[in-house]
Length: 432
Image (tube, rainbow, N blue to C red; front, side, top):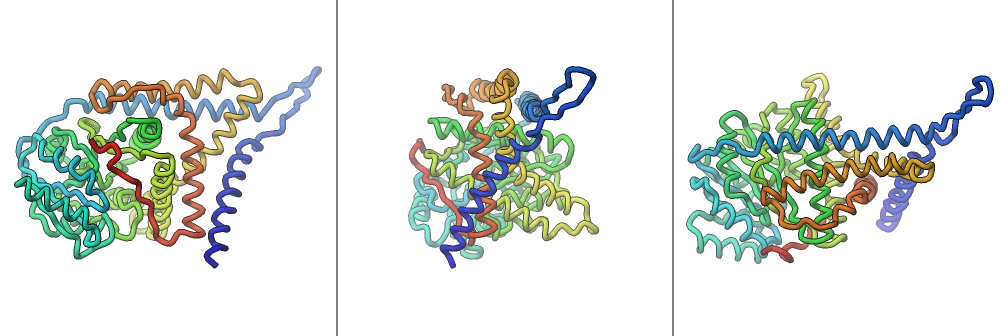
C-alpha cells in the first residue's frame, strides 16, 4: 500500500507539472484568421496572449517592487523605545545547538535592555539542552525552559513559554537569527499603536544557493505581498522576527500546534481576530539560508506542504455567515498556494515568446524583474544587511519554475502521501 501511495505521488507530480506547463503553451495555440477584403488578416492569438502574460507578470513585480522600496525608505528611521515594558524573547530550538549563540548573543546586544532571552528546548534534544544551560550559566539575562507541556513542535514551545513568562511583550526568533540591535527597541515603540510587529528576515547570500534563497525572499515573499497589503488589511505575522503584546497571543489562542507551518496559519488567526499587525522593514534580521540544493528543495517543500495544510484547515473553518474575514482568509491562503502552480504556466508563455520572435518582450520583462530585485539588493547592501554582491542575480529567472515545481510536488504529496513528516535543513556550516 505504501509503495502504491508513493507511486501515486510521483505520477501525480509528473502529470500535474506536464499539464500546467503544456496547458500554458497550448492555450491560445490556434491562430485566428479574419477575412477583411484581401489579403486575410491573421492574428496570432498565442503570441498576443504570451505578450500580455509577460507584460502583466513583469508589471506586477515592478509595481510591487517600487512599493516595497518606498515602504523600506519610509520605514528607514523608526522611533526607538528605551523602556516600554519587559520583553521576553523566546528562542525555540530543536537540533540548533551549533547556531544558538547567533540569536542569544545578538539579542543580548540589543539597545533595548529590559529583555530576557528564553531558550525553549525539547526533551529529546540533548545537544540543544546542554548548549542552552551553558548560555544560562554564561549570561544573567538568559533562561532555559524545557517544553514539557506541548512537546514536539515550535508552536507548542512558543505557547508553553508564553504561559510561563511574566512580560508585557513576547518576541519570537529563530535560533540562527542574528537580530539587529535596534529591532526590539523599534518594535516596542511601534507597539504603542498596534498589537503585533513583524520584522524582515534576510537569508545571508554567502554562496550560490544562499543567494538564490535571498532573491526568493525578496521577490516571492516581501515584494509579492505588496498588492495584498494595499487592497486588504491582512499582514503576515510569522514565528520569527516578531514582537507581540502578550495579550495578542492569549486572545488568538497562540500558534496551532498541529500545523506544519505554524506561522502561516497564525497570520490568518491574527487577521480573523482583527489584530493590528504592522510590518517593520527597518533593522532586518540575518538568517542562515539553505546551503545545498537538496536542503533548499526540502525546506520549500515543507513550507508549501504547510501552506496546503493551512489552506485546507482555513477552508474547513471558513464559516462565511459568521464573519467575512473567515472565508477571505481561506481565499487568500488558497491564492498563495495557487500562485505556486501559476508560475509554471507563465514559463510556457516565455517559451512562446522565445519561439515566436518575441525575444525583445521576453528580455524586457525579465530584465525589469531583475532590475527591481537588484534595486532591493543595492538598498540592502548600502544598509549593511548583506555583504555579498556577485553575479548570482543571473539565476533570478530560474526561481519561478523551481519554486512552482516545489509547490506542485508539495501539493500532490499532501493529497496522496503526506503523513505529518517534515524536513529539517542542516545548519551551522556558516554560523559565524
